[in-house]
Image (cartoon, rainbow, N blue to C red; front, side, top):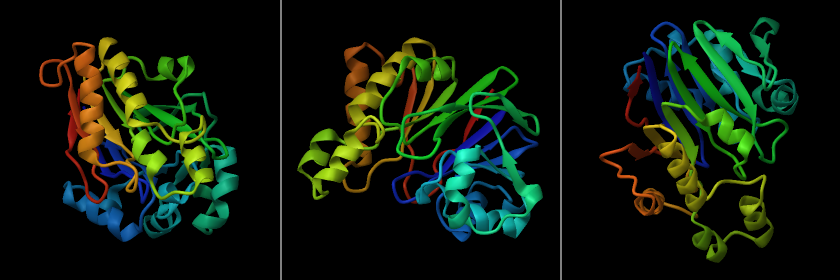
Length: 264
C-alpha cells in the first residue's frame, strides 16, 4: 500500500509525501521547513519520521526547505550529480553522510521503495520526474516539464496514479502581465506544460489504464484550479472518457495539503 499526498503544489512552492507504511519520503521541499512540517502533521504524519528528501531539480520552489529539513532531523538528500552542483549554495551545508547521489535513468532504492528518475525537458541542470514502485503499484510525479515525448510517455505508462503539471492556460499567459521573454520561456520546450497539453497526456494515459490523476504546479498568475480542471475534462469528454466512470481527476492545492490517496 502506498500513501501519497501533495502537500503543496504550485509556482510558489512544492512538496509531496509518499510512504509504503515503513519508508517515508519527501519529494521536493520548496517551502519553509515550518510550513512543510505543518502540512505533514495535518495528514497525520510525524515530520521527525521522514527517512529521506528526494529532489527533482534545483529551482527554489522545489529546494527552499531542503537543507533546513535535512539538518533539523538529520536525513539524507537524494539528487543527481548536476542537481547537487546547482543547488549546493542555496541549500547550505550538508554533512557528507546525508549527501546521496543517484544516476538518472538507473533504478535505485530508498527503504523498500524502488525509484526510477527519468530525464525531462526543463531549464534546469538535470531535471527529472520520478516513478515509485511498491509491490505491484506504480506512482509517477511529473512537473516542470516543457513538452511531452515518446520516451517520457514510456516512463509514465502503466502508472496507477500520476501527478502531472498543468501549469498555465495559454491564452491567459499570452495576454497576461509577464514580459515577453518570460512568456516565451514558459511556453517553450524547456518551460512548463499547459492545461491543454496536460489534458492530452491524461487522455492518453487513461486509455492505457491509469485511473488516478492529480493536476499540479498551477501558475498563480496564468491559471486557476477550475480552469485547469475544466480544460482537461473537456478534452477527456471529447475522447469519451468519463471522470466519474473511468478515472479520478483532482487538482493539487497550492497552499495546503490535498487529499491523501492510498494505492495498492
